[in-house]
Amino acid sequence: MKQEKLSVLCAAAIATMSVSAYAETDFKFGGYVKADVMFSDYSNGAPDSGSLSRQFYVPGTIYGDPSNGKQVVDFQARESRFNFKSSTDIDGHKLVGFIELDFMTHTDGNERVSNSYSPRIRQAFVSFDNWAAGQMWTTFQNPGALPENLDFVGAAEGTPFVRQTMVRYTNGGFQFSAENPETTVNSYRSDTGGSSRITSGSGMVPDFVARYNMKTEGGMAFTFAGLARELNIEQDGLDTSEFGYGVSFTGVIPVGQDDIKMSATYGDGLGRYMALNYANAGVLDANGDIEVISSYGGYISYRHWWNDKWRTSITGSGFKADNNASLTGGSVNKDSYSGYLNLLYSPVKPLTVGVEYMYAKNTKENGLDGELNRVIFSMKYVL
Image (cartoon, rainbow, N blue to C red; front, side):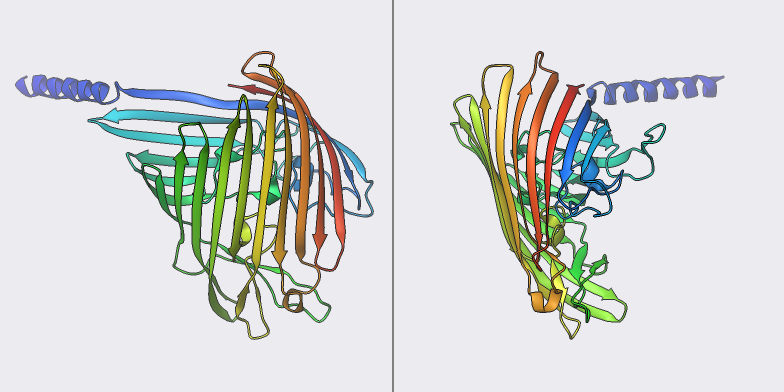
């Protein structure tokens, strides 16, 4: 009997401790619902239905299929997303868990009947005080400086844009991370002058990023980031590595009620970190060694508030890769530019409707180019 009473008391004590431990936990559900209608005109013929370029602008995917028509319309709600966040205070320590999903990029559904697309993980991480681990935006990127565009990415050429698993340490304005490495290079050109992409996850050295965030008393915000990485290929008889690096700057500058957002990035061997992997980090020479490819890009965006409900953003973005055409051949991507102009209206704070015009041009090393003109109509409700 005494043993039963002791067991009941222990169970009650454990339950009380559990309630006490989680009494300071906040749970939040967030995300948004977004519907897009996109009217697109591809200079070389539209990509097939469901292709990535039909979901959002990806540099390098707008060359299209000459056998298809040039003008298409796409209706989608795939950008809609949801997330869950928990935040717990435990003896003065802060524990945070976060997971976010959306429905972009998948080809597992179709537009014939149900438009059923699987959710995908965008972010999934846990943080404890200054340390964080999991899938997040790369420390080399500053999502807070992205322009307010209706296109899913907006200014895609001019910004680093990567989400991947990492371990990150933050102290004040400083951030340091060791992130998942992945190498993309061009093969040595074939006899016909072509070059294919080689993707490799070999090697034992993570990508390292250091970043400093600063804010001024006037409300300006700036970031300075540096990236160091090893490019490594160990497959199909190849065994070669090379050092790559990058530097990036972003700024958000208030101008009265308006603001200017900007970014500038340069590096040798940046590859997948810039312009959604429009260009690769390097190219193999005739001996099977990696020669890094230099690249640079940036954007600038000005947002003007007509009043507290109406606003307009105008954005210009560009990217260029310095390919060694004698190694890559002429079929690789060389440069990409895009421009955006929109008008957005929020009758109430959580709801935004708008229209945006965008123009993009991509050019290959051999001079072949593709152009995209697109008008987007959107409605977005923030949960």
